[in-house]
Image (cartoon, rainbow, N blue to C red; front, side):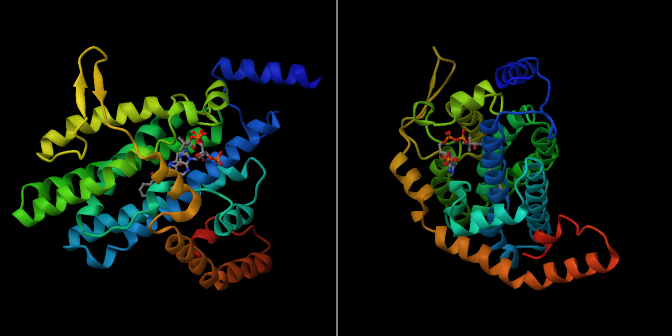
Length: 319
Ligand code: BYC
């Protein structure tokens, strides 16, 4: 078949809601854009373990510690599903990890902010996982089969993450004046970075149009961001807290909230590597990778001895 016919067949599969599978023909740009997005997503999951890992030893009770540990372990699992999905497109795990460590590959801007108080664990669960889940519910219907199926598993866990975050903040919001203030302060610091998670506004997004045509994305960055604002504006009333935006107001004509301007200079600054914790996060990843080398070596030696393939989870177990 000539390339034009292959492309037409490919697009009609997408239009007909048939999933693209690893051995199917696909345009090179579709393969590349999926590798880019899925590996960025995987990197976000494992870098995302770091700000929360920071609080495991300081959780205020055994119950909170057990919940936090379970959540951080879930994020490692999400990373595994996603690296495995990206590998089906022909890029090795080693290459992906190298791109993360060299700064070539991106990961979500949100994980370059510090976690200053215990309330940040609640705010991350509620706002960050809340933003992530909206995006990932959409990605359960993405056109590349292995990525769609990975997101189905991820969403099941992510909804627990969001609920535990909200419940944790609810306790603080009903606590002492100091706990209430800590809760409000965490919301103030995480609100705007959470809105930035959805990516640049549609007019500035380089990948939106093509990714929508290929149904890699089913909603645009701005559509998902609006959905998030409307969801959180309703939920914050239960907490009795405020969102740090005096322009946030219900628009009866549009049946959605209007909200204030996002600081895109801050967003791009963080994406380019100059956020408050970018260097710290990458250094922590590189250190874990180096210190886990002996585990990977041992697993490979064992696999050679037994003539079996090392488990794909060895990489993450080792870091
Ligand atoms: N941060 O053309 P656009 C989690 C980049 S983790 C950094 O709109 P696209 C969790 C973008 O890559 C959840 N960079 O891009 C874990 C592009 O640059 P390149 C993470 C960003 O891909 C632990 C450029 O800006 N979720 O849940 O069409 C604890 C132009 O953007 C960001 C995912 O990764 C950003 N926020 O749309 C707790 C979801 N936004 O690559 C929680 C999967 C944009 O062309 N990813 N950029 O050089 C996606 O759905 C899409 O990639 C995005 C961006 C909506 C994020």
